[in-house]
Length: 232
Image 1 (tube, rainbow, N blue to C red):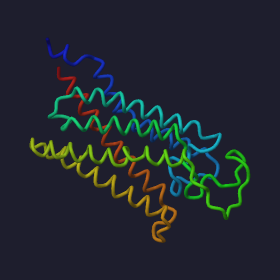
Image 2 (image 1 turned 45 degrees about the vertical axis):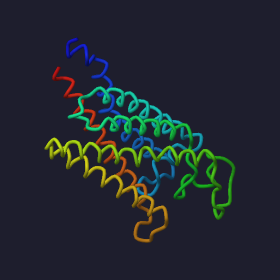
Image 3 (image 1 turned 90 degrees about the vertical axis):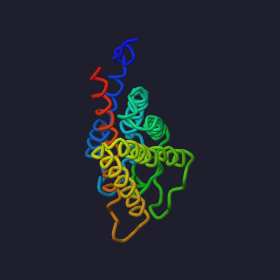
């Protein structure tokens, strides 16, 4: 069997989808956020764009991006280990895709003051002084975030370790650095919503930095894999 037969064109297409998924996701939620009344990208979480009757574009964005990453993971699984690293790396990428799909299916509870409790499009008026009750949907949404904000950094660390052993120090450094930055900014995102005085009003900014860092690394990994397939 020839190398071309071992690596059909479908694998090229799948890894290409992984390259495009992250930038597409960020571009779409940026546009949606700019058009959503009362939404402040520095303060509010990306997931909050999925709430209410006007939240369907962001829910679709979650599901589409997740589906692209699931497809990309199947391509990454066929890539040489010297490029991807541990076989757990594609599994974590696929798990992140499933997490995104679940995040689109299950809508988050109101967080950080968005959506406002009295907005017409999000349901009946509620006293602003009342804390919104947690729902099954919101809890499920948070659970599906785990393979995204934990799985992607783990994939980066595994790829870094494998690359370091092969003396591919540039990729090892980039992968490890991306993992550390994604986790650090996500922790700051949580602290901002935990009412830390010095981080108040910046939660959305920290979350976006975390997303851009992690998804950017997955785009780079997919591009690296795509280039390796092109050599055959």
